[in-house]
Image (cartoon, rainbow, N blue to C red; front, side, top):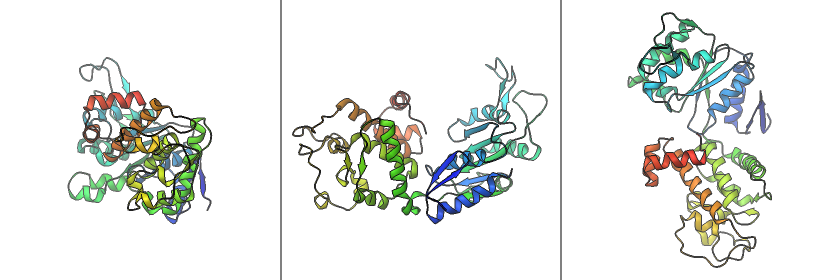
Amino acid sequence: MGIVKQIGKHSIIGNSQGIRDVFGVVEKAATSDSTVMIFGESGTGKELIARALHQNSKRESKPFIAVNCGAIPHELLESELFGYEKGAFTGASHTRIGRLELANEGTVFLDEIGDMPAALQVKLLRVLAEQEIDRLGGSKPVKVNVRFITATHRNLEDEIKEGKFREDLYYRLNIIPVVIPPLRDRQSDIPLLVQHFLKKCNENQGRQAKVISDETIQMLANYSWPGNIRELGNFIERMVVLSVGDNITPRDLPEKVLGEVPRENLPPMEKSGCELSATEMLQNGLKQSFFIGLPEGGINLKNAVEEFERGLITEALEKTNWVKNKAAGLLELNRTTLVEKIKKMNLKR
């Protein structure tokens, strides 16, 4: 089994036993029409696996429609999934095709299925049984031919016990389970992912390529990565932008990654012409009031500050599972201000 596994058009990186087990299930399940349920924490790559299943199936040329059940308000989710007829409710000035109908002959990916309200769970159960949907305000059902792939970060068996998720729906959806291990359980894959994201960021930034020291990679491998692969990718991008010099060293790491390693025990910084690097000052929340000198090549302060702000906002969103009210609270911002910044920065989950 290779380090980079090509499934359909998608490359999945890793050589740990946990991810190789995922490869094996995905390769077998992709060619079938069976319903798949993907289990994994936020940021582990559940949608990537779902797309790989679709791209390697006989439905590859047909639509792949992704719906995040946790991101759409409950009162709107039904019309998003099932669509509606003209005049179905106030403001319904035209007929709208729902996501399930748009996915006809293709695949629909229902992410965070555990967040689906109980009333919709009943309707979804009927779709699975009858392969037909009822648009809101419609008088006759519409036949659909859709493969379902779902995903959740929740323990649905616990949700069933608490009466939050229907047991019959769970068994209809969980025909082929795919369990993606968290990144903390894939420690041997972290160096591979670091190099992948570093190469990608160097190419996207269009600047002189940066390298990362072996010691730094080892420290990254020892970190728990609560936001999983998504957090790692965002972190590497931030390091590429904010680090001073061409070599990323442990000195460029924030305290949360360094853990118990005191900075005085770290190897000395590369000669940069300053007592405290601009990067460290930014990573410490701009708490330092001044620093002596600038790096030889200078630094674009505006860009550095913008990237630092982007990193903090992304981290707050990841920690709160993209619940904007909670993220705004962590950042001590008004929710509207945070939403404006997310739009301006074009941040996406």
